[in-house]
Image 1 (tube, helix red, strand yellow):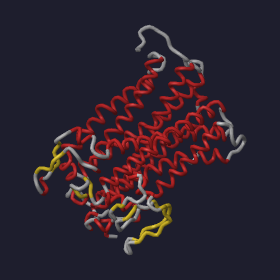
Image 2 (cartoon, rainbow, N blue to C red):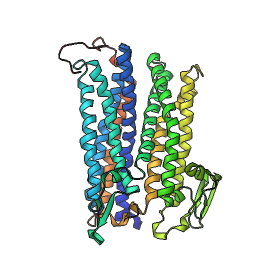
Image 3 (cartoon, rainbow, N blue to C red):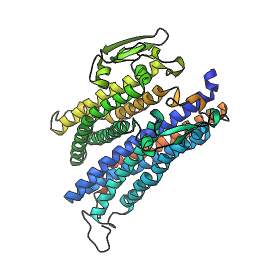
Image 4 (spheres, rainbow, N blue to C red):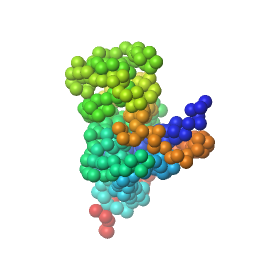
Length: 458
């Protein structure tokens, strides 16, 4: 029970909980933005009222999710100055820039043109309206870039120097470009962004499958299944090299994390476990594994040896090795599930399994599996970085605000749980009602297939 009065543990739990909650909506928001841009492009080209209605329907799904994502992200930024004030003092010179850029360059781009999409129909030209849809998606992708830059710097810091000593020590920026494009930024950005696109594609696929199961709007169902399946296939294929690049970065920059991910205690070729568990006390891995396959993913060589956990100082080894092992391998297993869902989507699109409901029911689990896989990937990255909050420079235990009281953290944890539950219920009911109403709601006479007029923005 002592852990429940440990301020560091409670602060980590609070940040992890709010981040996990926020990160449910980020993948949906950015993934939905991709589908919105595709649907709006199709509507612009065909000038078909049904395509217009489908695009407006998807805009409704995107807008509601975007609002919740923005609101839940604010909590994380406040926590830097409350629970993690010592961390903020250490990294403020570096960390503030990408967070400010995310708000100035990305959020405003996204929100301004979302306003055009929500209120500009029939008031701006079709071309400008289409460009707005793509700029909304671009803004969300830029937002993700700045957040990844900030987080990647914590994982693989570069372009800085530490001045001062003890509590007065802080990291000072020496090169913006080296800090922004540190050794893991681009690889992690590609890996994360593709995961978000896959989530959007699978949600599109699932909505189409839902309509097909219900025998509703066969035209909309077929279009959504086609777009979701093709987008899922393309982004899934692109994920393969992105995952390889991510494995290379972890192996080169954070070898202790790699060892924890595979429960490896001694130097050897790194296996890829399919299922198992880590006996941390006995320093043994009990698993069904593919020999040397993690080494192959990181180096194209099954025999490449990587250091084990016993090769690192005890105070630099991540805690909870079995937890890291489990969340990482759950992510890997879910990737297999996602591949099956995409293949079923392609098969349904091509007319296979006609009249069969079981493929459609399996497709419905795609978005949930994708969100869980993303969360497991995030947990792997963050748990594997411990005990460091800035890798190699600042430990998590030294970053917490000294004035934080454990009981204050417990109270806020309870409040967050209650408030976030209410927000989630509202969002889900709104989302479910929008899906239930479907594109048919927008099949009305005043939906213009095109707009021509004087004084229209081009």
